[in-house]
Amino acid sequence: MAYDRFRNMTLQQMDALVHLIDERSFSRAAKKMYLTQPSLTKHIKNLEDAVDAKVVVRKNTGVSLTSEGKILYEYARRIFKLMDEAKERVARVKEDETGSIFVSASTIPSAYILPHVLRSFNRAYPDIHCYVQMNDSEATINMVIDDQVEIGFIGKLISNRKLHLEPVWRDRLILAVPHGHPWVTRNAITMDELTREPFIIRERGSATRATLEGHLREHTRHDLSEFAIVSELGSSEAVKEAIIAGLGISVISIHAVKRELKNELLVEVPVEDHRIERNFYVIYKKQFGLMLHHRLFLDFVRKSEAVFNNS
Image: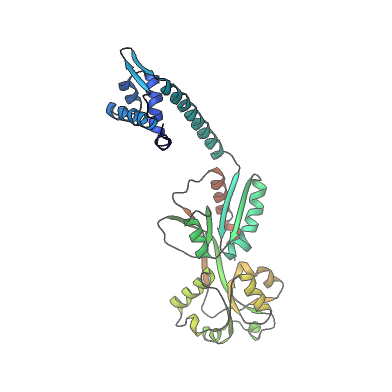
């Protein structure tokens, strides 16, 4: 028996054998499988070619199995029994409040929003475990598309036919300066003044940077090339520490600096006639089969919206 040909057997051929023996008739088996009789006959012929042996014998009284056919029939029944068990287990998992969720999130959601959401979610659903990676928005989008994670949180609006996208949290970008900066006593500064002050910027790929660039492009005559940029940093934490250290000032998410504003390490200075706002979005592939634990998590995230939209 040729091993390679044997491995070419298909589940549909095995299913045809089971139906044929159970029904004892090619016509009845074909009807049960919603096939034509020639199609069923072809499946049996291909099965016999794969095992290089006859598996059924036609008689006046019906259809019977050869010795080789009896072996195949026994294993086919076991295979389909295992498939039924697998189907039942998958169905139970879909309705069970357990499971793992793999998430990628951009800096602000992963560092300042999701920890609070996950604390409450874990209390409500202790058997659902979330694994969160911090990446910029571009990397998060790619990881969701490439099936490296199941759910993503990003800070910019995108259009991609493969992805479901919906807003979940609001954000406001503020101008943050260190305590003791000359602008602390100002009611507001102008955009022209902002371009001349030592400025710290986030890295390319950051949604915070993209939001600032978009605002400048749509609402001012300036762009980042005109700013006195002294450093480009890869996280909001690094930007905060650089501001506190006196390296420069920056535009940063209100979520990232709430504690520093409260403790007067940083001060928000309004920019005249400018308010920069954005949404954070949850994304997942449209073809991704959401199971119960995914749906519970997404519903919980949606309900958390009010908590984080008061900035």
